[in-house]
Length: 176
Ligand SMILES: [Zn+2]
Image (tube, rainbow, N blue to C red; front, side, top):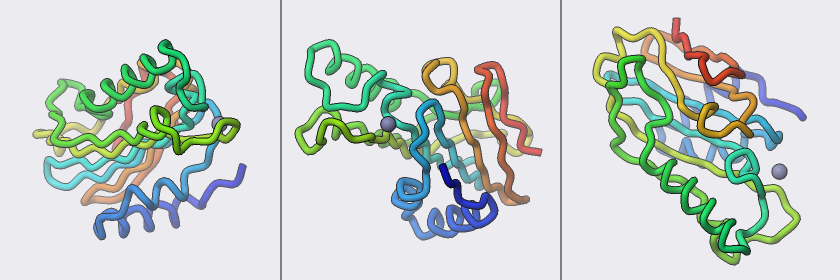
């Protein structure tokens, strides 16, 4: 699976985020690799803008349209969790969710065609007072979704940009 060069990717991500179209950008750039996901964020003052993208199977356990009541329940539970849970936090848990837009709708509707791969994407805005003093952040994603085995994390802050790969639910994201 080809991946975009990190530096070019981040520069594009940064620019498109400023222009307000970060979500569309991430959707076109994120590779679909089962077990993998991407988490991109931009920190400015206490605001953190996040785009999370993952093959649907990592979170739902399937990528087809939800047919059974059990599958529909899984879609609803995952959507509710993504709507209510900050995907990043400081170690002391100071982040609050200002907005969350999970795009899981296609799995509950009729637009989706069985047999294709599909992704879940979530855009979030957090208010994280004290982020400037917290050189590390945590994410609940790997613990919540064991199907997400590897998370590529990329960020832009006022002082620079960086990236890491998380493979353990206990790992934190060190910004420096
Ligand atoms: Zn797939």
